[in-house]
Image (tube, rainbow, N blue to C red; front, side, top):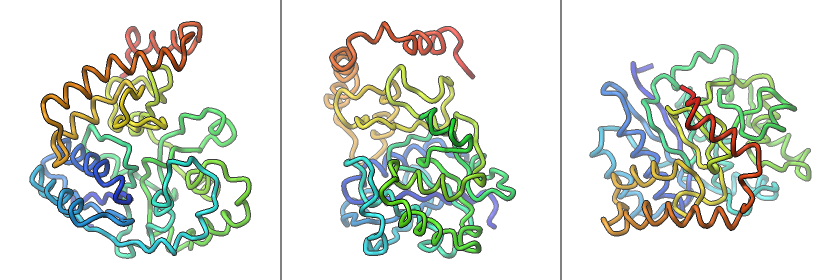
Length: 304
């Protein structure tokens, strides 16, 4: 293995190409000087123009970017899995990463709705031992209560060699076929159920799942990776995540950057209007104990 090499996988279609570009920009801007970054983009129909836009990100820091064309017919069995309407078939690409990248033995898999705030070297060098994957506990406490090793699949370190050797991709498919009517959390549920007991749980800062001020998986002041898990993403006006400005910060390093006027609108105006929208959505938020817990942890305790 080449020293300091970090393999990163992102999957998207053309609709999410810009957001994948922002993820890559955030990684490149926070990489250590000697990080050798190799990006593998599982391409579900990205336009030539958007591929060119992503390629320009190499000016931020030298890296390798490889687009891997995907035949969606390979995922036909997963199209009937119940999941959120806004999630595309591209999310299931991660279930076949080991066979799509047969020459790679270890990879960090990232969703397109994350922002990276630190070098990924420490995450990539996670000691996997006998574990097949590593991730951060999911924000849904009910899932974690049922399975203490249940992780959010938006940020994963995956031992692809073990996946291939043990033919785990077949296990993913078999589980899906046998439970097609009962799966409610898409590919995340498939991964957690098939790999139960074989997923290493990582520190929370490697996937701070951010929905709104109250709903965050961690209140650390040093999130290494922020994951926008709500239906309304930062690119949806008046979204609720308190971390959304990170998205606009890194958007400005991409070919999709905003003009100064647009940037003010999406930060300052957005800040005001998101508060108004949240008041409409949850007018009695101040009666919820979770709000005061978040207030204390954010401004008084300030977790490290």
